[in-house]
Length: 203
Image (cartoon, rainbow, N blue to C red; front, side):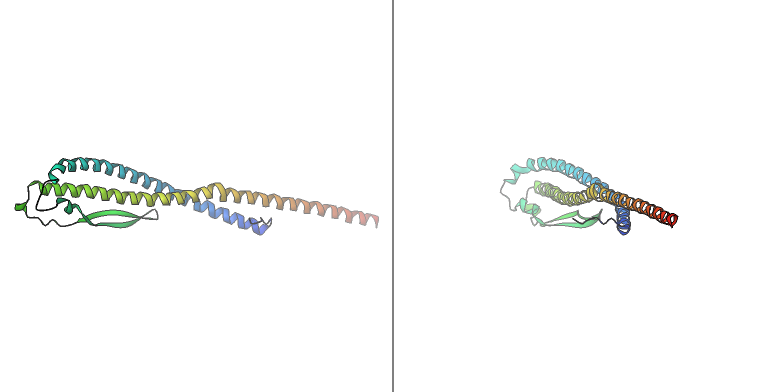
C-alpha cells in the first residue's frame, strides 16, 4: 500500500484525482442505468419468446401423428438450420447480437407426390425453429449485457465506496497535517520573536 505523502503537492494531486473521479462517476452511473434498462428489456423479450415457443410447440404437436406417416419426403429435413443470420449493434458500449433470419434447407418435394398438409407442417416446423433460434440470440444478448452491467456496477461501487471516500479522507488528513504545521510554525515564530525582544531589552 502506498504511503500518503503529507505535502502540498500531494494535496493538489489528491484534489485533482477527486475532481476526476467526481466528473467520471455520473457517466458510469448513466451507463449502469442504461444497461439495467437493456437487461430488463432483454428479460421481457425472452419471456415473450418463450410464450410464443410454447404456443408454437402445441401447433407442431398437432401434426406429430401425421409426421409418422411414410412419405416420399422427410418433412423434418426442411426444418434443418443451415445457418442463423445475425448482425451486431453497439448498445451502451456492448456489442450485442440482433436476429435477422434463419436459413433453412430448400424443400425439394413435388406437390403432387405429397399430402396437402406437408406445406403447412413445414411452415409450422420452421416457425418453431425460428422462435427457438430467436431465443438463443436473445439469451446471447442478455448474457453480454449482464456481463457488462456487472463490470460497470463494480466500477461504480469502486468509485462510490472506495476511491472518492479515500480521496476525501486523504485530503482531510493532509489539510489537518499542513494546518498543524502552519500553527507550529507560527508558534515557533512567536517564541523566536519574544526571545529576540528579551535580548534587546537586556542589551
